[in-house]
Each structure stands twice: as C-alpha cells, then as structure tokens.
Amino acid sequence: MNFKNTKIKILDLDLRGCLYFNNLSHTQSIALIFKIISRLGDGVFWYMMVALVWLLQGPQYTIQILYIVVAASLGTLIYKILKTKTVRPRPYQVHQVIHIGERPLDHFSFPSGHTLHAVMATIVLGYVEPVLLVMMMPFTILVALSRMVLGLHYPTDVLVGALIGATVASGIILAAPALNIVL
Image (cartoon, rainbow, N blue to C red; front, side):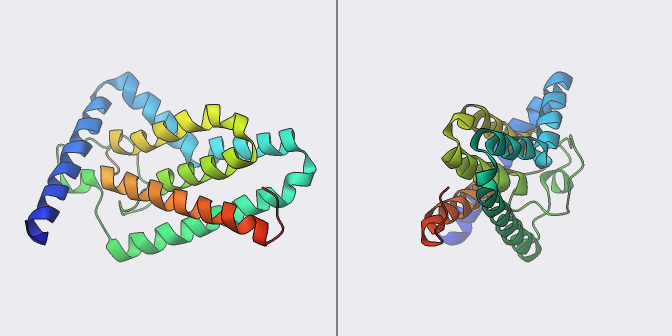
C-alpha cells in the first residue's frame, strides 16, 4: 500500500469517527451535557483542581502550581504553532453533515487544545495529588469526547492533542527533580 492510499484510509476513518461521535449531539440533552463539559474544559475545571491541590497540599506547593502554569504555557505554545502550520479546517467547516454544537475558540482543528490541556493537567496534577485522579480521569475523557461530539475536532486531532499533553506532562515530571522541585 502506498502513502497516498494510507492517507486516504486514515482520512476516511477520521471522518467516520467524527460522524459517529457527532451523531450523539442530535439528542438535545447529550449535546447540552457535552457543551457544559467543553465550557468547563476551557479552564474552570482545571482552575478548581489547582485550587484543590493548593488546599490539600498547602501553601508550600505554590512553586509546583507555578510549574503547572509553565507546563500549560508550553502546551499552548506547541498547539498554537501546530495550528498555524497545519491550518486544518474544523469538521463542520468541511462537511455539511457535521452539526456544530459550540463555537470554537480559534479557527483550526489540529490538534485539540482542550484535549492537550486536559491530559497534561490530569497527569501533572494527578502526580502531585493522586486522589484527584478519580475526578480528573473521567472528566478528561469526556472533554476529549466533547470535541468530537460538538463537531469541532476529528479523532486524530484529539489523539494528537492527548499525545502532546502526555509528552509535555511527562517532561515536566521528569524535569522537576533536576530543578530540585518536588512534584
């Protein structure tokens, strides 16, 4: 199989996945739930988790929280560079059958910034305070699903966003001891 055929098959699977998840938004209550999840994933949920870490660990964890802010900034930089380089249109912009359930924060689809930040925050905050994983893991999965249900991202956008988020989080966790920071 050549590269062109492989690319076409991946794009076909991507569209099928997007259509499958987006069809869930045709039920009004499901669309509303995922819209709320998406809005909370804009930052509100993660700010609450950071505040919880600070409350559970105490003020001595302020430096770790700043480290998390640096990780989030790095994640934002990476995804913004990728979005401007790849300029992949969002699914609803290309396929009329895709129902848009939420207005996007920016113009391009690849990668999913919501998923990137959700995975990154879950890994880093979960490393600092493992008990929070009980809330963060399911929420992270729902954020990733919301991006497809709302017609804003293809599955590959979400997958790559998750991989970048996991990579940034792992880098932060591995770099912390070298900088004498206990996460």
